[in-house]
Each structure stands twice: as C-alpha cells, then as structure tokens.
Image 1: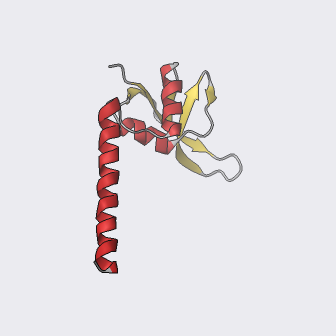
Image 2: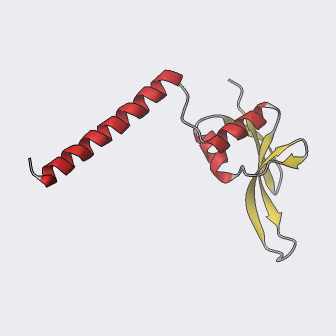
Image 3: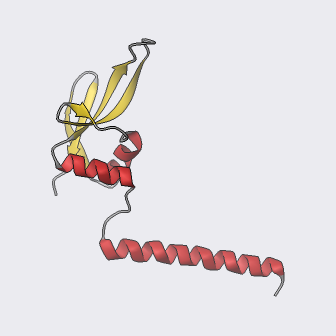
Length: 111
C-alpha cells in the first residue's frame, strides 16, 4: 500500500467514524446538538426570559443597529446573542411572542 492510498483510506475511515459518532449521539438523546450558550439561553427562557431583536442606538457614536438580546427580569443576560438565537430558532425552540415598531420578542415554544 502506498502512502497516498494509505492517507486516503485513513481519511475515509476518519470521516465514517465521525459520521457514525454523530449519528449514535443524536439517536441516543433525540435532541439536537446545542452549544453551551444555547443551553444557557434555553435555561433562561424556561425561567420566563425572552429574546429581543431590536433597534439600539449607541450613545457614543449615535449609530443605530439591530441587536439580539436575551432578557430576563428587566436585565440582559451577558454572553448570549445572535448565534444562540438562531441555533434555538432553527431547532424549533423559539416562537414569536410580540412586536413593536423597533423590536420583536421571542419566547420559548411550548410543546
């Protein structure tokens, strides 16, 4: 066996091993694989929190842009934002709650 064919065989074996590992993991828990921040957001949402996608203004520069914030009890949970929002939304955990002219709110979808 030459070095090139050995490398190709090893690459194929590694990809099959990785595919089998993710299939077995997904089959055993029946939940989508979520990141640590998405799991943190899921806990906050279960306690009555909500995601806010709204227009915010920077007080220093005056620039306005849309931001994703996880809110709980009038405050913002630090470290959880757009990536966790889309991860939970794509997994089917979020549903539309309400909307204003500058913000949209999302809550945990009840099964």
